[in-house]
Amino acid sequence: MTSGSAATASAFVFVWLGMVLAVSFLEAPLKFRAPGVTVPIGLGIGRLVFRALNAVEAALAAAVLAALATGGAPAAATTLAAAVAALLAVQVGVVRRRLARRSDRVLAGEELPRSRGHLAYVAFEVVKVALLVALGVAAAAS
Image (tube, rainbow, N blue to C red; front, side):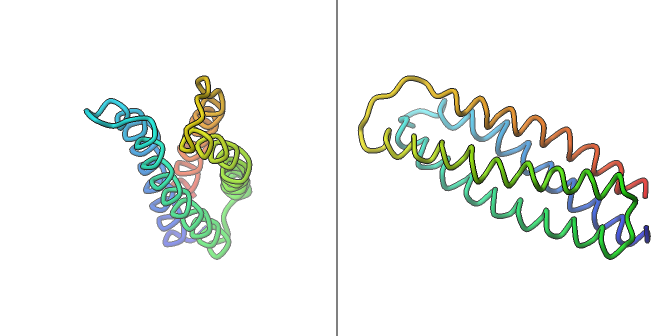
């Protein structure tokens, strides 16, 4: 793999990793602890933030895959990149879509028990973080 492509892919991966860590594991849980933030306000903020994060993640996934493809990346890095991109697609297309339907109901005033769907989203985030670390190291080592 060319050194420029490896550096580019690695940089994109670690920016992506930083964004996921900051938003999913710092901002998301903290917003509900801020004074005056109700569940509907927190859900509204969360929907906007995660929609933006997921859009940036999709762009970063495309950029990583392009950098790996143009640089002749080893199979391990390409496999990790494809795995994290597929995980993101399922997370957004299935898990987040279900959470959005549930939050629509809450925002409409329906009282629902705590959501286990958020635990699935967090599990996807944990796996994504592990894959991004592995991918970043694999890309940097190429």
